[in-house]
Amino acid sequence: MTERQPLVAAALSQLFTDARSHHHWTDRAVSDDQLRSLYELVKWGPTSGNLQPARIVFVRSEEGKRKLYPALQGMGSNSEQVRAAPVTAIIAQDMRFFDQAPRLFPRTNFKPMFEADAAFAASIAFRSSSLTGAYLMLAARGLGLDVCPMSGFHNELLDDAFFRGTSWKANFICTIGHGDDARLYPRDPRLSFDEACRLA
Image (cartoon, rainbow, N blue to C red; front, side, top):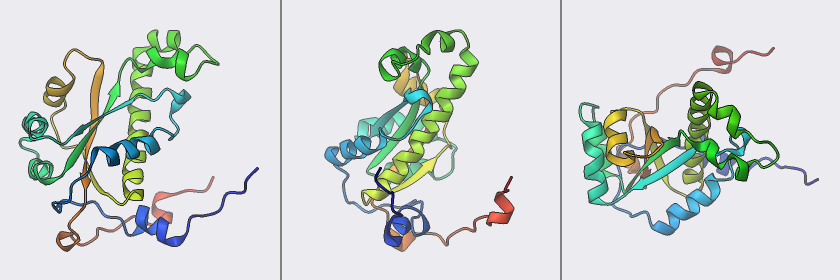
């Protein structure tokens, strides 16, 4: 077995300690190839039973942004951030993700279990799609992009605009691009290990 080695400090800094959530963006574009490369990394992140309930819409056209704006009204500066960002990813969850279970996890037939318990299925869809959204943010940073996750939007309006007639539901959104470092806010504090963690 290959022994895993820690990433070099510069890589960890790019992913975590020096990375920031950007609210202002440069005019550098994000290409289709970059978004495809991003997904090709994200898809390998683990999810419950390998069932991959996340679905992603990369909103980049003016038409797509106009569809998104009504769901952001009354949510502070989120609308302006989406307007300025090259891309806004809608990280959604497919509430019928288990239809793919026979293909994605052929060792066990999970589909009847999820069909019989909608609340359990919904909890798995939310939890695993949230994980995938986190993988997306780290993968974007690894590819030299910046991100800013947002949960300030009206779910029903967004779902109606993008997912009407489907089994997809929005989880959160995340702007993607090249952040303007000159306009960063001062960094907010983080909880210490002793405040946030316990050893059991």
